[in-house]
Length: 252
Image 1 (cartoon, rainbow, N blue to C red):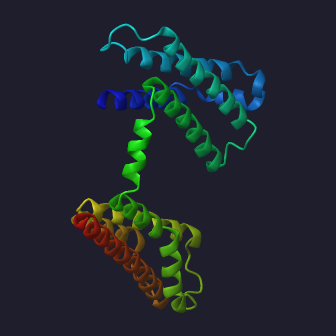
Image 2 (cartoon, rainbow, N blue to C red):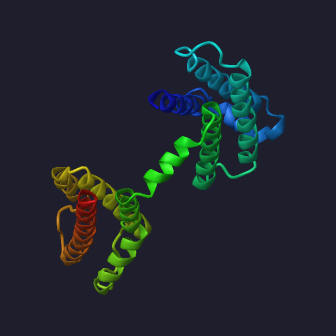
Image 3 (cartoon, rainbow, N blue to C red):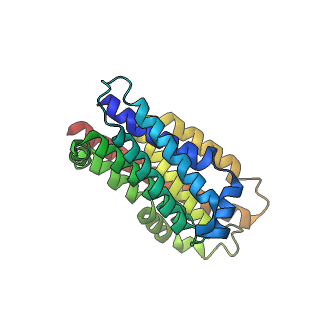
């Protein structure tokens, strides 16, 4: 099983190398400018196919040499052709949108997963992963991470909205503040699940240095108290959820 997982990780590794480390910026610009007529599109896809072929070939070294060559070629061709089609489709979309970047990478990874499963010749890894995913500890952790994002942002905003009117001009980006809070809660939840409670203190100290400067007037004090209230609510709720998940995981 370790060797099988190493093959999948090797495919992902060379994908990252090919898509980022070995792809010059001018190739990307040429693909968006010339679309299907861009030679760089096919050169980039051929690079990925060659890298995949190399990884599949390396996976046969510890094994007897009865692995058909067409399996290696088939995997490399599947990676190369799919990469051409996916990148070509992406070239018609806005490069500035995160959603298209994430979709692009997800499709590439799905292809690599398919090549890996075809190489193994069975779906047992997917069955094992599916069974693991639907265990109470894993589901609890997934639910916890979902709760500390958008749902808790809404709850905290509703709790402190009675004081929002007293802050005429907070001088901050409201949407950015909500996202900072979500990232903060995800980090706190992760630290609690890893039993690194001391690190949460360093997180709060670092945020205090960044967010709370010298108080120069009544408005500054109000804003400081307002932000402090939101921060404490954010951190404390994430900690409580993390501790509850740990209790459930340890009791199951």
